[in-house]
Image 1 (tube, rainbow, N blue to C red):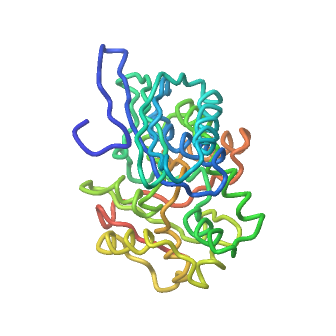
Image 2: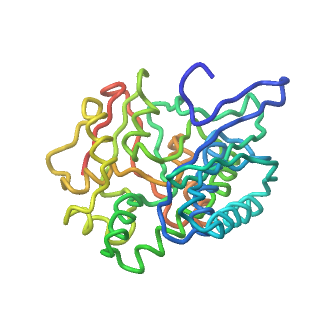
Length: 305
């Protein structure tokens, strides 16, 4: 690929290319089995965002052998394997190292047709932006670590983080879209910036249309904010203009780093409603149109109420 994308694509023939990615991170939940599921779903997501089908995966494990019971690793790996089975992905190996800090993830290889690769860039003026999952995982996970998050919030976030982007990817390929990325560590606005930087397009994000997990604003209001949010905001401050009538807390939430977040899809206005309807029919109920692409302020994002 000529620019930074969610995954690497290598063309083999005119009809076949492989798509490759890897990702691993430290636990975001206490339950090792659930952590394994989340890490696997997150690793697979980049292939789905490119429009590919993941085929094989290899485990990446960093484990503190001297300080943690080996049963913890077994549960993590079981969670990952179960999620791979759901995705119809074959585990073909992996590698582990003794590390003081626990980490887990996957290296994933998938298949894609070269002429159907979905890149971050490709939006056209007038396109609508659809987000397939709510945001707020960073804030709710931070609150959970301090025993401040409600059971409902934690349950909703875990369900979202363990949900594959497979169905959303299949539907967008069926309808036909212009660009896509998945929302992860750089936050919604960070990844939205990647879709338009160095292009002739700009983006408008309607803050109040962005779906949030329960209690996200409440937790952010009392200061339960991950450090990554501030880093994301500082890094993109020159690329994002926030209208004065936007709730400042909500504006901050738009920079919240996500784990195993949804797809951010750029689709023509004539297809947007059809895509949204199909997503809802498939059970992706919180998918929403959150913005649009404009020929104003190229390479920049305008956040409006």
